[in-house]
Length: 288
Image (cartoon, rainbow, N blue to C red; front, side, top):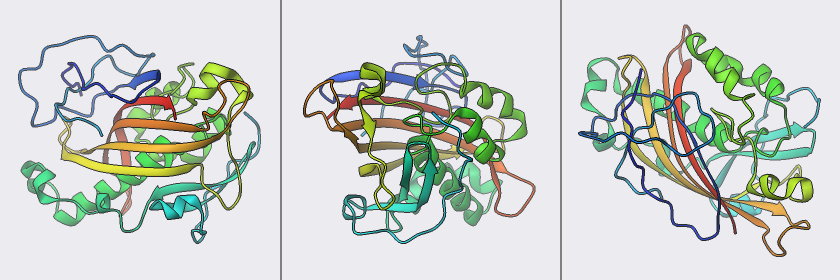
């Protein structure tokens, strides 16, 4: 599909540890014009191009378990406005996988953020459905996947979630999970602490507790991808995850994530099914 490339806004969190761009071609944002090309400084990615924007952002072998619905406990997650998808069993323990809170404004599309051309191809209800599917995947899997922290292997994740990827993208998406880059491709796979200190830092895995303690989402735009059938959602996210301090740096028990995330999806063969056709993620991870 192809997207124009250029400089992205710099994140400003203190103590920069790792900046990884995972790039692909969701299409050109209708607001982009006259952007000069530059090479992204990042780990290997599915595509060498990244869309420019002027907006500031804000190891094991258990069988993959599908997250089941369960009520949110009175935990640090629920108190900070996070939603809960359900319990997820992993090699490192069971944890509450997060989703945007039910009352998060990000679920509801502001008409001013939607490219008018979309309405000539899809109904308002279809656009909102695609946006909700994109948003849920970016948070539940893009950020809080069990691959983030190495609690599942890429093969386990693919067995459980690979059907979410459109057939024409499955080869590239599957490879992105096994190409050796810290953050893989469609989901984030590693932690700042693991990259710097190995296993001396780990997330906290408890059945009634999420790994996230904070999540703020802003929907930036929703537009039609270059394939003229995929609906693109772009968000910025600011999040914090709790880690168990190890032998690295005393007191750094928080991982701070600033992310720019874009996901494209098109209708599948069954009603309500949306298949991922491309993505672009840019993460900055620091110790809190």
